[in-house]
Length: 145
Image (cartoon, rainbow, N blue to C red; front, side, top):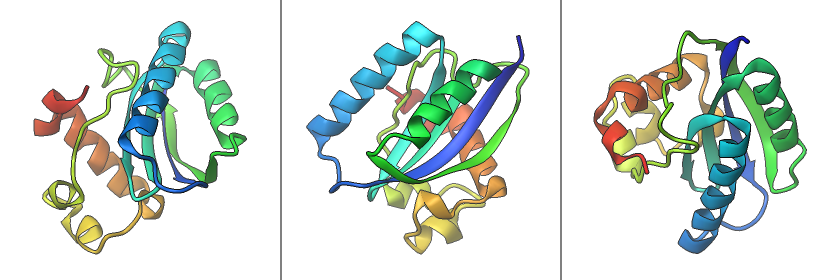
């Protein structure tokens, strides 16, 4: 079984999610991911998502396909999918850090990106890996819920 992670970004097709809608979305994702043995994390700001999915390759590909056809998303963009030696977020079926755009702008290598209020959809592979590393090893790891 090859363990992979998939990092993708997308935009919400509807109006911005409120706290209760986001909480309900996280609850559903966590329940479904637990059943499928998927781990990862989600960032959400200004109608855009940054998500990391970790599992075996076939599970990740099936889930990404489902997400890609979900009408709640548009501009679904796979940024990275690659083999990994171990899960970065093994404790979370869907970690969700409560982080502001201002805090994101303090991550070295991303301050110019988030300082100009860009969407997750504009991240490239390099910045996606920088963001992943910040949550995998950085101070926000403790804030993942």
